[in-house]
Length: 127
Image (cartoon, rainbow, N blue to C red; front, top):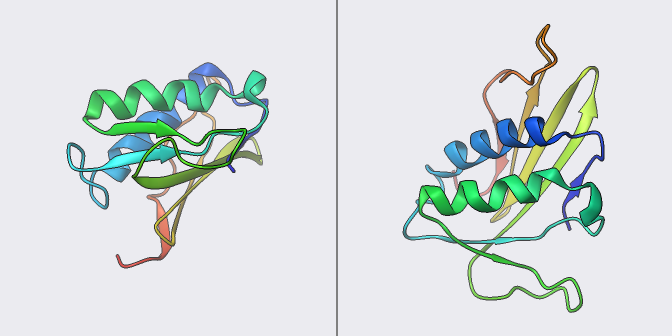
């Protein structure tokens, strides 16, 4: 199951979702991949899933969600879990799919907006 810290704002979520979709385009090609999102249990504090769904669909991915009652996917596809948590004054985003974990740190600029930090750090999987 994914986790999104309640302090992640809608603006933060737009930045994170946009970068997630751009990153996933290489290992999981759009138009040929269905993503199965495993959203956090605490949906009332989850701005990231709300931003990810339209971003993934706009890029050409099929998207389904894990059923929170059964814990099973709503269809076939590549499960994607994500963890967005605070680190220093920014946010650390971790993506988990197909035995791979990709992480990226986003510091905050002087205006409070998240900025891309270093590139995604990837470990595991068949990259």
